[in-house]
Length: 413
Image (cartoon, rainbow, N blue to C red; front, top):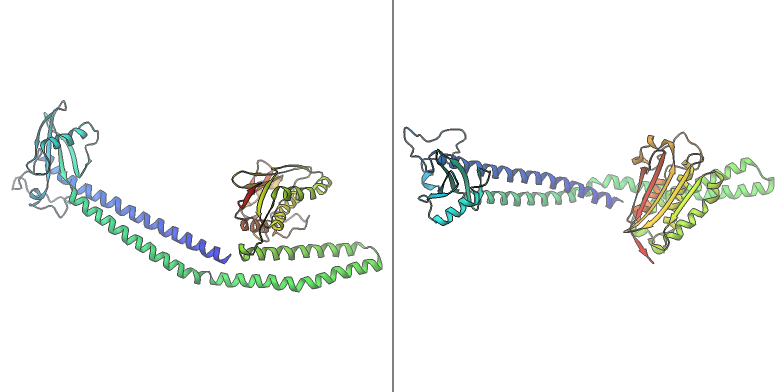
């Protein structure tokens, strides 16, 4: 149990760190991409404003000083920027290309680039390593292409560096979580060990006097005859013995899955056998039982524990079923076995279904009928989990409650 708790803590903490770092990495990627596009768009704007070329900087056309102009932009930028411009007429027919500021692009290549984007609705974008902008004059339409290969390479390097740093951070934090988790669960482990020791000691300390009490009741009854007081003592003694047995089984199931002795047995027969044990009680209470059990379903597990699980669910259904109500039991195997136990219960709307499996929790505190101690469903949950399964409580319509148990260690004959 402690190992599962520690693993869950490591998993949740690591997942949280991964999500946070993924958000940081995504933000870095988005920001760097936006910054890259914005920087080159400033250059495409200046070129398109110059009708396809950089206007010379002079007194009439001074160097831009707007806050939007990045620091890298200087009077040398026009000479270090690789770009070309392609012109079309209003009807979209190719006219000419200006390749004076680039040597790696031919006129045919420039025309091919332009024709791939001339019909697009987007006025800005990327084609290969070129950032483009479509602009219009009075009689012509131009497309300016700016080489952004160096800027993209720098942005890619930044993203790769960020990824390496963040992955290294995740690995380091994961290592720290693994180390710290040992100390974090230590108080819980100590408390859990004390709880197990208490249950073990209580089991030994109570069993012997309880056995003597039950034996003495039989002796007194034999000598003095039947008495309702002796019956009450016997019933309460049986209740206490049942409680001790449930606590002991809970303790054994919590230790580790390896402590559970598993064999292959008939899950179908187990369900039918347990159901048959409740027929007389159900008839006595005037309830209606409907059972549908798929035949020949085999289960690899602890047969005694699984039978206890079925008994707990049926006992719970009988105990809390409304007067003249109905109980439905079904078991089938598809990818895994699914056992469903439903019963009528008018107070289902008021239940806190997520707390039904808490130890010593009783949903109906006002009801005194029965022998429940508030650990039956908790025990059922532990049995299901020890068989790689789970159990869920749900509202099965108006005035009905259901319990769905899935066990995954299954085989079919």
